[in-house]
Length: 270
Ligand SMILES: *[C@@H]1O[C@H](CO)[C@@H](O)[C@H](O)[C@H]1NC(C)=O
Ligand SMILES: *[C@@H]1O[C@H](CO)[C@@H](O)[C@H](O)[C@H]1NC(C)=O
Ligand SMILES: *[C@@H]1O[C@H](CO)[C@@H](O)[C@H](O)[C@H]1NC(C)=O
Ligand SMILES: *[C@@H]1O[C@H](CO)[C@@H](O)[C@H](O)[C@H]1NC(C)=O
Ligand SMILES: *[C@@H]1O[C@H](CO)[C@@H](O)[C@H](O)[C@H]1NC(C)=O
Image 1 (cartoon, protein in one colour):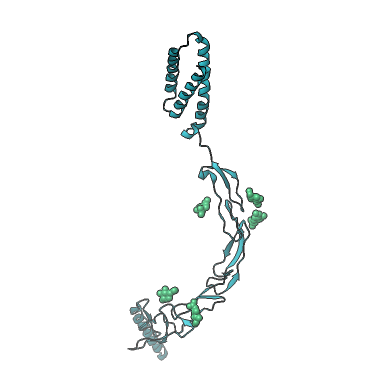
Image 2 (image 1 turned 45 degrees about the vertical axis):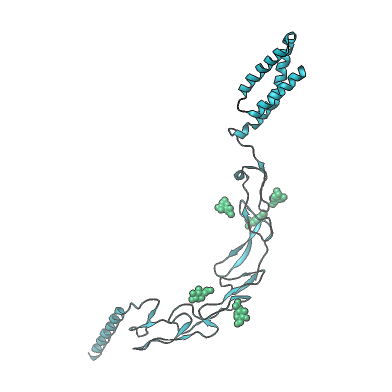
């Protein structure tokens, strides 16, 4: 009977303590922590410090700075600071009370883990391959084939996209592969319908029209040989140049050339 009473008092007390603890449970985060008895909120120690003594009734937390070779980069209730990381090869930044050491590796070496506390000799990948880092915490390196449509034409280089000649409006003269880029030729002829595509036809007209003129004139010459006078010559010139200039209106170079050609051929005849 006595035992049971004792037990129930104990349970009630425990319960009351629990309720009280929950009432103050909202210790301000990032600044306070719950003391070990669960009742009070104690101030955290700043970065660069560790807890020397927890707060007690009326007494604040006692903090102490980290000693050399140790650091604490967060405000916490830890009783110790963390040991500074040791680098295998090169210290990039010395450890401070609030920041861990930052490591790096010597030339020709690569980090063998995320913290770079260890290093491995770097591999020079041949053409057509590139170095690939594998792993999340510990790293290993492998030469990997350049994927489709990429190439590396230097040792130790990275895979780059192959040039797509069509995108540059050029024709491919040599296809690319994993070790050589595509080689593009000069600007490809544009498809029909573009003004530039008329160029071949225009050149044919330019070459052919003086010949056509000569042919025409020689026909006329044969027919009207007796009647040719300086007067009829002028008429003939007018007659010939007028329809032609209509036909090829808007194309000055041709017209100029035709006129020149017709005069030349006429002067030859005369
Ligand atoms: C780190 O500290 C040492 C001496 O403690 C010094 O010789 C070295 O230059 C420092 N390194 C950097 C990166 O500051
Ligand atoms: C060093 O630590 C402080 C406080 O934690 C932080 O504000 C700062 O950015 C850190 N510096 C470096 C270089 O990581
Ligand atoms: C890498 O490419 C070479 C030839 O370029 C081929 O023989 C080899 O099988 C490829 N390796 C892999 C893993 O695809
Ligand atoms: C390479 O090509 C891929 C797809 O073909 C594209 O997503 C990527 O942006 C290209 N990279 C460069 C550097 O042009
Ligand atoms: C890649 O292309 C180059 C140039 O076109 C050629 O010399 C070489 O043999 C090709 N390599 C392979 C693996 O096909």
